[in-house]
Image 1 (spheres, helix red, strand yellow):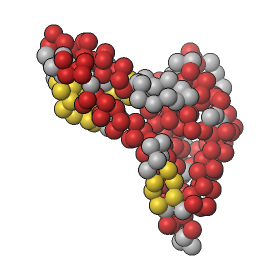
Image 2 (image 1 turned 45 degrees about the vertical axis):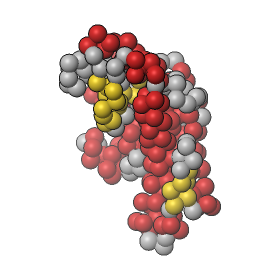
Image 3 (image 1 turned 135 degrees about the vertical axis):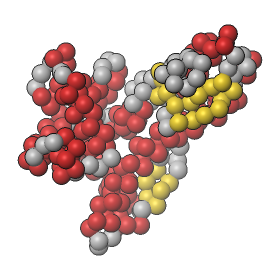
Image 4 (image 1 turned 90 degrees about the horizontal axis):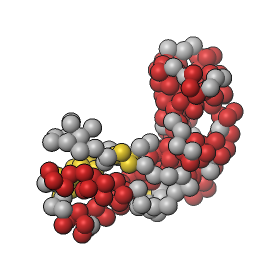
Length: 225
């Protein structure tokens, strides 16, 4: 089973941006919703290409992508890329404020903290070298969001490894790949073990938005997707 858009869900939880929170609570496709906002149309009218562009923007801005790189990724002029970013934060203004709050906290404390309380020191946040300072700002945001998502899957691994129900089914945790956990299990117990795994993964922490884990069963890793 693998987490669905866990980093964006963590971002919604921490930022409390009403548009982002509402999208996940309503079970909407976050990339289609973003595309609808950016292109000024209904979600049902969004094309696959527009959704792809919105996905790039959702993750790109999370990871600190600037207008120049965004333009290269999407084949846009610099002016068009800047316009996309401006529109994005026009609809997600609370999110923009949250990004700045992370940077401000890092400057004050010298570090940022993940969901589980892990700290990352950021000595370059006060660097006179603008490139190092910009990198530290990106690291601050990335650490809080990506680090917290990593906390969640590590906590899930511990719970899965100790779960008596899975043990009775003969299930064994054999692999973690990014946001995904893979079990080896007798064929007869495949689906109930997968359902149990998904239930454990989605109940690790209480976020302001639902946690979703997509489960698949197969004879090998490829066929389980």
